[in-house]
Length: 176
Image 1 (tube, rainbow, N blue to C red):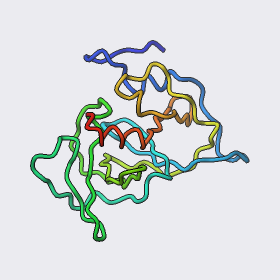
Image 2 (cartoon, helix red, strand yellow):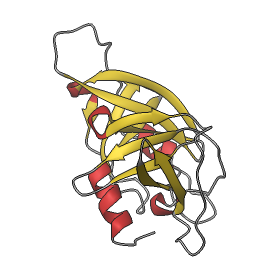
Image 3 (cartoon, helix red, strand yellow):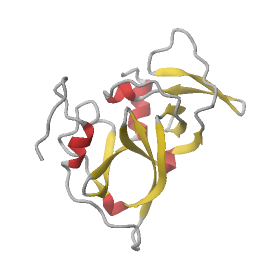
């Protein structure tokens, strides 16, 4: 399948991932698995390792705007006596910005815990480790530092498994 580019001369994420190759088999085998949280951002499918997502909050969670924060920070939430930031990843990942009241994933890294706004939660499931493939070279440049692997669910669908630590480190460093 030939890859096309959008107006910004970047490959569409789904096209880049689908060019990566063959699908994976079902989970009914005795192979090691990894839990993942599947979600959508800017209409595209992504995943985070379940081990870094400590909680999934409803979209009804109050987020309080604080003037003067970078546009990657939506605001803060008050969660059981703790104040946590809520970030939006679209700018960092080079995706079209979308305003969504979707769910919030509470994501932990080495030095930070923050809420990450997502458009839609698709699933929390186990994937066999053998279904994880290296990211394709055709990924858009903005995504390359943040995609740790690609999950192949079938021949037509590949999902970018984001590296939470790389995302949070870039966010802390002020990139995006």
